[in-house]
Image (cartoon, rainbow, N blue to C red; front, top):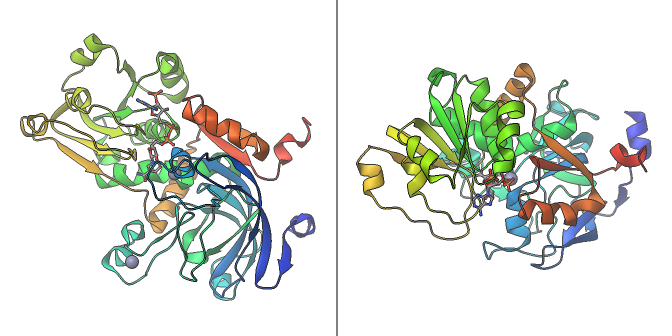
Length: 371
Ligand code: NAP
Ligand code: ZN
Ligand code: ZN
């Protein structure tokens, strides 16, 4: 890893390294270069040289202050892959320089509560978000659109050798967001042959297709985009495609699905989708909708249906998912872009113009030859 260190651009300064990041200064959400002071490396910290960072729709929500809780300057990005550049003494028990690693949506939790005890630290009340949060030392947390990050080693995972670091990046959020509820709600190989729908074929949604197929489920994409039909079936491997605006086909598909995962990021009616569920069917919401949603209760009652929710997954579960993805050779479909394309990529993401995840090449190496 000598060459990696020689090429390193991070500068050691009093307190910690300085990183070159991209930050939004306000709710226009437009990113620009930003000098970021990282914290000094603590005993449990890992310094990650960021090579790739995916762009999740949550980044868009946060950058544009859709939830009214955004803090600026904001360095977004929580689908991070890279190499271990340095680490504190405690972290050395688990990581070595040059290890291929990933960081997802959270970078801290209390370690004491029942959620932490159960390995579902994503539900810890004192968890720390990777960015747009205040860390235990009182400083803002900042995300992966940066050349380096300092993260407690308990929130860093190993990326298996046969997973390319660019295509692995979306697994750190989109992948685990799908894998965790699929396991929890019983949409895994124990339900082989059952039917699963996914609302919204974007970064998260396309991972539903990938995992559902890996678990042996029959998967239907329910989409607002007719242009995605061919690719959904021929490339991603979906078994069926339903255009949500096609009332006749939606009616014909009533009571055919055991499960649905809803990834739509904006307010939408639930009734047409609840109608697709069989008796005892489950609809799991993962889309973070910035507004109240409505449905009439007989939609649930007259079919013993349920609506649930789910937020990413635990760190151990994330490692389990990465190992399974490596074993089964599941691949995210990505579009790799350079960092100076990021504002354009966010614009395109907002317009639903990405197949299916933008991944930023933070070092620009993928573009050097073209350039
Ligand atoms: P994305 O890539 O933008 O995909 C969302 C998909 O939803 C789009 O591709 C589109 O699919 C559909 N869609 C978009 N706007 C729509 C609209 N107005 N009406 C109907 N359908 C629409 O977003 P993502 O990164 O997958 O994220 C999806 C949501 O999950 C976001 O709200 C994000 O914040 C949330 N999220 C939650 C978690 C969690 O842990 N729960 C983790 C990650 C992300 P079609 O073209 O097929 O209709
Ligand atoms: Zn995300
Ligand atoms: Zn806790």
